[in-house]
Every structure is written in C-alpha cells, then in structure tokens.
Image (cartoon, rainbow, N blue to C red; front, side, top):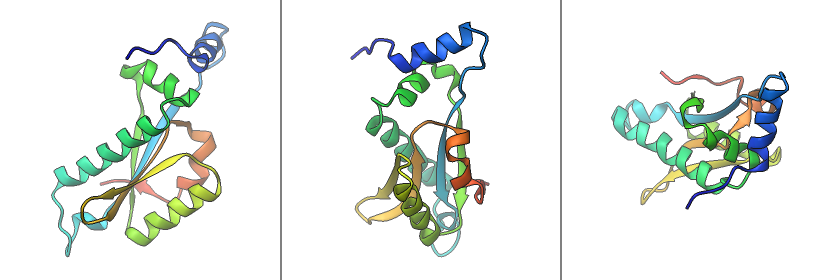
Length: 140
C-alpha cells in the first residue's frame, strides 16, 4: 500500500525550504548486553535479530505518527542508535520510565521463551528523548 506524503513530511520539507534546519529524527534501540555473555551466550546474529524485530515492531506500531511517517519518507537518511543495557532489570526499568513519560516504544519479548531482549523507540528528535537514554552507552 502506498501512502501519500503526510503533513509531518511537508512540515520537515517546508522547514528545509525556508532555510531552517530540518528536524533530525533518530530511532533508538536498547539491547540487553548480558545476552551475549555467559550463561546466555547468544550469538551476535541472534542479538541483531532481536534489535531488528524491535525496530520493525516499533515502526509498524507507530506508523501513523507524523515523526515515523517523515522518518520513513527518506529511507536513505534513516538514523538508528543501538545502545546497551547491562541486564533485564535495567531494560525493564527503562521501559517503565518511558511508559510513565509517555515515550512511544516497543518492548520486544523473544518467544516462546518470553525473554525481554530489546526496547525500540519510534523515531524521535534526540532532544525529546536523550535525557532518558544518556546513561546507556553504544552497544559493543
């Protein structure tokens, strides 16, 4: 199904045409680092798949939000940042904070084991969500 250019994209384009800096949208993902270590020892591919699942689910869930629509209009300019959470408890605490602050996100659970693996936010200007993510470092 083809979607027309939505109002958010027109606003971003209008800002660029007027000389104002267009808003940079970023999709943040927070992935559990402990899953790559003993006793879990998941391979890199399995962890990458979890982040992909979470990112796709967030984009689909919030596809009608103006930021998501604008983000998807320029596929070659998508920005994602993958951060690491040390463990499940930290990831769940972040999910709780995001929920309380009304930050749109998807908490991904690997099935059928029901293991919490990753959080993906919908695309946001980094200024709107940076304060909730600043304690997390880039995933290594």
